[in-house]
Image (cartoon, rainbow, N blue to C red; front, side, top):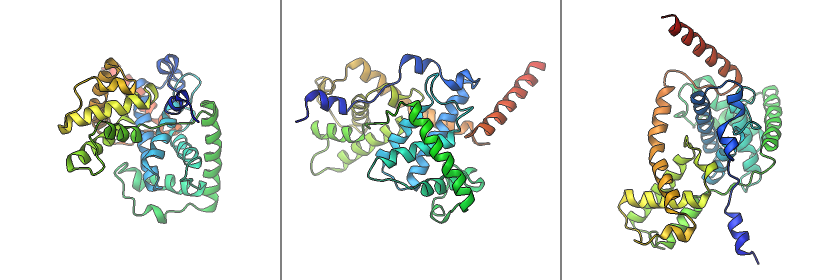
Length: 304
């Protein structure tokens, strides 16, 4: 019989420490906070797109996104200047899917990433066509090289995370909470479906949050905040008592998370607009080129 403590632990994730949030290998290697944030966002977009093309469930994709985010945290984590974002993305998808009911072969992973990173698709990324991905294949030589990088990066990611890759996502919890609160009955109405859909949309947007919500908050808190905000925005009345305390979430944390969830879409929109005329770096060579361009612009501005 599983104890209550065991049940709670199964719903908990390893959260980032103050040290991990205050500095990172990328920062120590001279990557500015804004560029680091942009590269993380680009890597997460790539991970999401790859998961969709691989027909993985949103739960697996979300877990991979959290692993990618955690990998680049702290002075002992990965550095965008050394560890290519595109490689860490592929490794995160691979190792997450491998331990699930939806494992993917190295060839499938390599083919999808080669497709997404091809010139024709990269220019329109992430709104790229997906119907050609199934017929996109690497040559045997290119595949063997990509496979070697994939497996090597998987080990690097696992070591950086101390092999702690258990991720509980808040999506199923949120649906359970909606049912518990009577918002999502056994025979859902159009309104209850709208609340459920909006709740999931908020949780998916939060994966890209600049506040790194998934590595700084437990899934129970994220689920409660998404349910609260979605119900409010759809216009569904929740119990007037402080029901969130039943799910071990206090008012202060709930308030912070609701504000953070509200801001996600606007931040994502601004970040996408920032890179409309060029692609955000996804490997060390592209990063060095971007840093050189920024350095030249800074020198030119100083001479004016």
